[in-house]
Length: 387
Image (cartoon, rainbow, N blue to C red; front, side):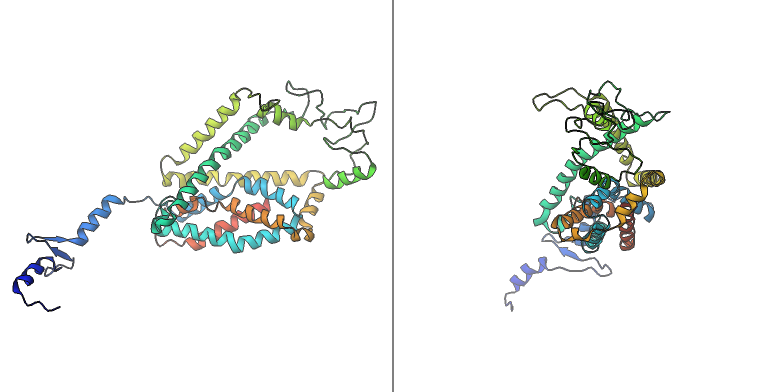
């Protein structure tokens, strides 16, 4: 544009960006004649708005924290149950496929994303504000998961307390407790069926013919030394002491929804202890948490190893291993098997909750997160198979 008026040129001059000699920082000439360094102003503003984020003391802290987060009841409890329901070893095929196509890529994506932007799950979608609601939804979902998951831990603590005995007479072994009913039958007691029939070591199963009895033996890996006798349907209306301990002692289930029942004071105490443990594990930040997880993430492996030795020493262990390793490939044609595999991977890896993003955000910017994420994925899946 050509400007012929000299006064117009003088009016445009104050708003033209200029740089001072010897200073690489861009500055703007204000109408009053003063200048302002734009870069330094932005830098000072950024320093005030974004505080320095804590970092893991070492890469091992990050790995152990991810292992402690990912490994839980989904590996120890849920995976063996799904293998039993979905064809034994055949379930490993959809499980491994889901890991390779979904589990590992999403795990790397979330941890590397957190390392890149150095924010938690709630703030990671600032790079795309239209998806900000996804981060909020993940936090809400994690909130509800924590509410019920901590209750399961309180149940485990209740069983731990009741297991601390010198002898082997745990309360769910016999039927001579105050909460047991007259229908309670223990497999360790010499109980006979009604009408002078001999003992039947099974519960809540209607066995009317010899064929049903043989099928029951195969299903529950009953050894040949157990003496079975066929009883009538009326004789079989009995309860295991294990079930009665759970329903009547631990939970205190009422007779109906119209009866609220009383507060379980022992469970409330265990629940409070679990919340206090969680608080003291994280209240000092990631540097403290990174040291606590060395105990919380490694202790379950010691327990799993003890349970493995105990399980292999029991009678009929070979039958269980045979069922686990012998696949039923006909199950692969059922859609439920594939749905269970995908659900198990997402549940076990803890994907989509924002926690992995938060854990990765405490890494240093040039940390090799890919190698560490693959290590955690291998440990997680290996624990499931081991359990």
